Length: 350
Image 1 (cartoon, one colour):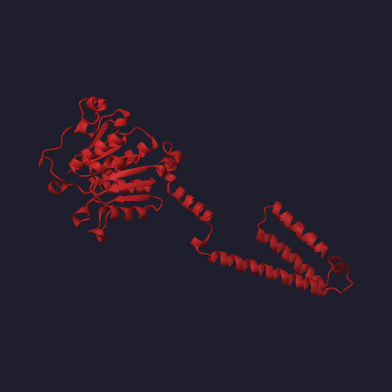
Image 2 (cartoon, helix red, strand yellow):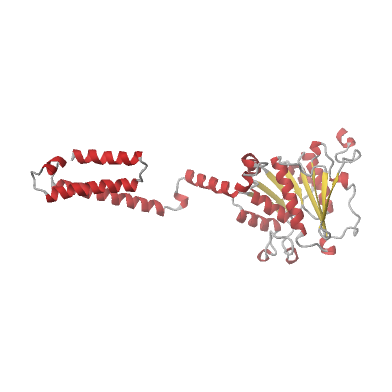
């Protein structure tokens, strides 16, 4: 029997160095065993081959039975492992699997030279607060969620209505009557389970804005309330947080980035006073092209990603204006107003 064990070990070692699959090595050893068993059965007791292999016919049959039992036991264990539920598997395996899924999800970002692995990590560790979950907020939230921004807050006090669905693509018909922030949360979590969504179902007011904004790396203003825009602007300046601002009117939209902590002007520098009542009609009064919020909101999401990762040149200090009716785009340069009550020289001295 010692000869058999030596030959079996030699065959296994040879197969290992030749990179032979384990299954093929086991088959080779099985064939060797069957050959020895055939010798023990077919040849007389004193035959040189029986003496060389050693043992008796009964001993070789017992050895074969033990081998079959071990093989069967290994199959049972493999079957049981296959039936193990995911939540009962080691957490290290789950973590590795989740990391691989997230890596594959963001692969198209990672291969971009301007973003890469470091930029994607900055997105994952970043936090963005979106003001408004309506026409502009919908594409902003969807694209930032898909891009893998780790924490996304959304502020809105409104509920989903039927006339929103023409342009507010994050909401669906079965969510009519649901608060927009919870509808948006449901959509984002279904889209990307690796994103943390913080819904704030309330109206944004000056008494909470600065403290709230200081919890985020970036604020995006997509609201349709003129008064709220000035609240957002003041709070971003106070919290020293960059602001991506967008607006719509019928066929036209605009996008810009304000970063007063970097020396740029603010929203009030560009628009010192709110429009007089009735001068600028709302979407309900003047209408709005359905895809237009998607175009402008997508631009806002692009600017947010560039600010978070440092890629390219953002629209800081510039405003892009898109005219959908005539398919024209133009960019104008913005300047800080020294007399601005928010970021001007007098305000800095206070």
